Amino acid sequence: MPKFIHTADWQIGRQFTTFPPEDALPLAEARLHAVERLAALAVQHQVDAVLVAGDVFDMQTVSDRTIRRMFHAMQAYEGPWVMISGNHDAALAESVWTRAVRLGAVPPNVHLALSPEPVVWPDRGLAVLPAPLTQRHTYGDTTAWFDQAQTPASCVRVGLAHGCVQGVLPDDIDSANPIAPDRAEQARLDYLALGDWHGCKRIQDRVWYAGTPETDRFRGNESGQALLVNIPAPGVLPEVTPLAVGQHPWHQLTARLEVDSDVDVLLNTLQGLASSSVVSLSVSGHLTMGAHARVLSALAKAGARFRHLSCDTQGLTLLPTADELASVQADGYVAEILQDLRHAQGTPGEGVDTAAEAMTLLMQALLARQPVTITPPGGAA
Image (cartoon, rainbow, N blue to C red; front, side, top):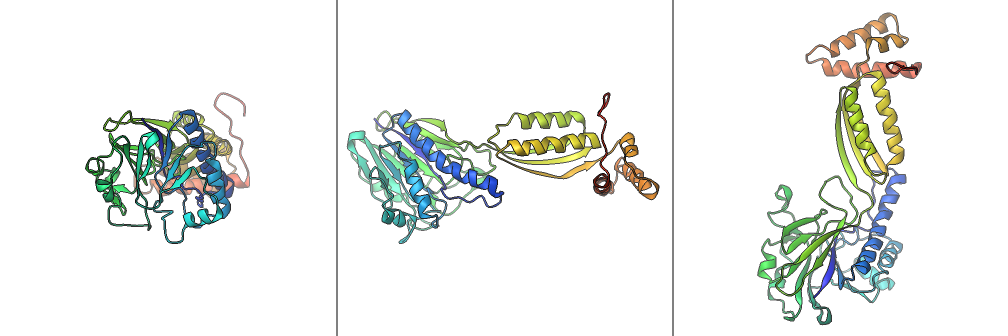
């Protein structure tokens, strides 16, 4: 009986506009490499088909070259691929799909299931019921026709859809393109392969979101995978196995730094992340000049090691020691201000944050005029 790969939300052509070009371009390219890995996994696991549950393309206006490259990336697996349209690449009268056909880019083994009609392979024991989106937002359930669809009794029934299972996603997300939570039961499906939610998520034993195969946001939702689905016979519960696909894990970190051990923990955490990571870091707290310099140096090195690092240090302020203040060439009125600000930072009250910010700005200005060498405790600089 059939074994297939369930994947979705390739978002080919996505532009990471909030990233610098040197990071955005490799991340966009990684989405095509993910398709190549999916094809390799299909060959490795000798599957009967690969089912793609919508949002193959990120937008209708991707270039002709991107369309051709996407289908080229699939070539290693010569078995059947079944694709439906999602909200990003809806099957409009004129769409990315009609362009792909005109270009002659669609290989014979790729089935564009852009209308609600069963796709059946009796020899593989597989019947796929597609629910393509023909507009970006719908408010009726495009999977409703599954209930009356006729398929061979010898074939497992697999629904393929793109949308929101109502009332079950995190934070009670109910959006356009609704899907009834009992669709698998009502339509006698052996499996319902879903796209739209970018994380890998089990809704029911027979209902799964595969998630995007290449992570594209800071959600921590088990993305970067595809699902290997084996259904021994019609009516038997599917065996679902996640397969790692993505190259770039995304990490969103926060750190409060007050003492040297806090810095050690942060630097060890960063060191433990893969160099292919996309990292968003927010740092706050109060540090001596020596610890502050150590953190900034480590972040500069991490920025060169990671695929991308964005770091918000606005909440990180300087609290120099008495020796560090003495090492700064400031006298007269400026020296008095520094001492007053240091005292204010150590005195509870509404002015603590303001004093910390002022101290940081003043110290940065002084150090910029004349850099100071900080001597580590117990040793030479």
